[in-house]
Amino acid sequence: MSEETTYGFDTLQIHAGARPDPATGARQVPIYQTTAYVFRDADHAAALFNLQEVGYIYSRLTNPTVAALQERIATLEGGAGAVCCSSGHAAQLMALFPLMTPGKNVVVSTRLYGGTVTQFSQTIKRFGWSAKFVDFDDIDAIAAAIDDDTRAVFCETVANPGGHISDLRAISAVSDAAGIPLIVDNTTATPYLSRPIEHGATLVVHSTTKYLTGNGTVMGGCVVDSGKFDWSANDKFPSLSEPEPAYHGLKFAETFGPLAFTFHSIAIGLRDLGMTLNPQAAHYTLMGIETLSLRMERHVENAVKIATWLENDPRIDYVTYAGLPSSPYYKLIPKICPKGAGALFTIAVKGGYDACIKLVDNLEIFSHVANLGDARSLIIHSASTTHRQLTAEQQEAAGAGPGIVRLSIGIEDANDLMADLDQALAKATS
Ligand SMILES: *Cc1c(COP(=O)(O)O)cnc(C)c1O
Image (cartoon, rainbow, N blue to C red; front, top):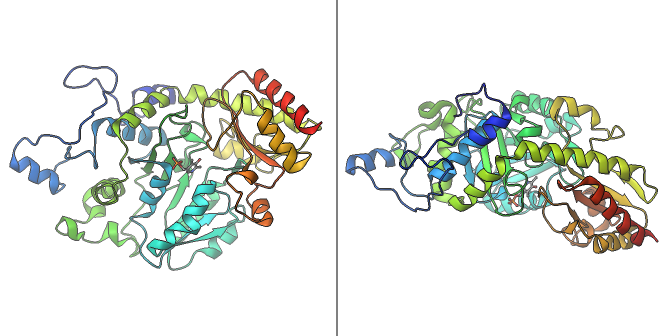
């Protein structure tokens, strides 16, 4: 259904990518729990392996349940195609893989999910890649960091942990001028709140583990391609523009046009890196997306109420939510995420480290977990958990100082959430 772009978001989140099962008429997308698919004959098999015909070979590459999810996310993001994979972190590697070779770098925001900071600052070095961390509020600094070996720019729409908003239009103007793609992690905003491709993003990555699935059940990731980048415009992306030896010299950009990145990610990325999403997980995520708009509306409504109440509470020093008029990012909301600034923010509790520990230990509805984007409300004290190994200065720079906790506001009754925070704050600061 991706062609029928006249439908609204609420219709597409239920119908895009899904059609009654051709074999049985099953209305819901079946879980195609199979590893392999029977070829019609030897010629059919050869055509599939040569990428001359599109079809199913082996579920490491493609699976009908996963394909439905890919089409649904691509449609909601306004992309040409999408590839799902086993986690959000896998999606980040899948996005970079066709672009990078040893010696190349990516210019990335300092405000990123903690695991992404580690992946970019440590692990990708083993591939000979590197990341340059820049304050993405400073657009000139992004331009200055790009050099001849830079192959992408990477940021989050609504950044973890503080809920800062990236000015995607200004950032994509810089990447466009340099002839390189902008990759945007849209996990915390979701396509309901923001559609980065409309602001110039080339690729959008997701941890579908979070809001898209929506209830903390399965891991997954996705790379959406806008289909708008000309990979042959310069000589920086030979994987996409030059002949591919593994497919008899096929040129992905020339052969597949706006689907070049998507086909490359399936035919080379999934085939050789093997970070495949399983059909069971795809099913849970398809179910989750059916209610995405309803959940995001409640997430945002609750976050605004709770952040406003906390900002006025004498036990709190400050709240970082971009949905508050006091936030320096508030003015970007109409432009970047017109339906709201998400439901993720940090609060500084008077009483520092000890008060934060007591707060998380005394909450009853909020769970102290290393996750976000669940239907239930979550809290984490980063300084004693995810950011425990960092120095005091590094913790402060990451927005994870000892007196700060991060909230992921769920879709429960907002009054119950405030009552829970109120009683735990009373114990924490008494
Ligand atoms: C969770 C998360 C990731 C990593 O995703 P996993 O599914 O846990 O691998 C990446 N980016 C953001 C913004 C996240 O919240």
